[in-house]
Amino acid sequence: MGEPKGVAEGVPIAVRPDPRRDDGRRPVAWLHITAPPSWSVTPSARSWCTCGYERQAIGRAAVLQLITAHGENRASCPLLTPALEGRAAA
Ligand SMILES: [Zn+2]
Image (tube, rainbow, N blue to C red; front, side):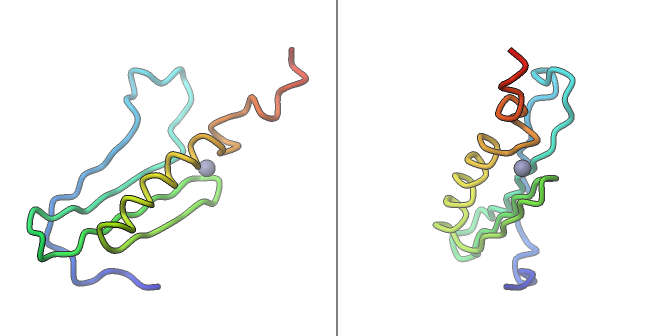
């Protein structure tokens, strides 16, 4: 594991939830993808969350897996799904 120092060239794309759809909760999970337009440059991505979740992916397939894993964290994250702990609040 290490920082991808060779992939500085590229188009950083920050994917964040639409703030207008946020119902007052602050975003706690981030997904950052560096996907160069050139196929000769390896794409990389980093996904992290304030619950302690953090992953980094190097390579096209790994980035796709990271995106999937990021979605899974958003679905199971205790910070994003307080309903899992609030079942008694009914
Ligand atoms: Zn989380």
